[in-house]
Length: 180
Image (cartoon, rainbow, N blue to C red; front, side, top):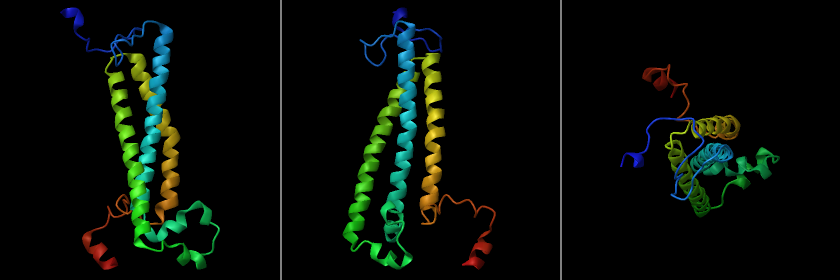
């Protein structure tokens, strides 16, 4: 009975019994390196998927009148043609938002699945796996975090980030009322 209980403390060993499934066992140094690399890559991909979820959220919240201004192929057009880039009807706007919402849902499902897998891996209480997940998450945030700045720059003038703007923190209600 005592041998079947799981140890609830971290250890530096190179063996993991029953990694996710009863038949998956890691029993040597090369196995723990491979498992650590897999979880490093998994947490790196999770950070990228979070950034993708951020992108879909921004695209859903985007003002429909600015769709033509953010399409890469229309960047070289003059402002005189801006009215021609506006969607011609409300159904196009609804379809585009539904498409972004659908891709956001799939990205969210992937995020949840991958996050639970990584959580279960860390719950093996192995320092090597734990460090690999931390390193992969940090490296992923470093790489994909730069993308959030470019998304904020590209869509920042479209008033998508109005709620996240912190410039109103030092103003009072009376000051805001006078500005309006």
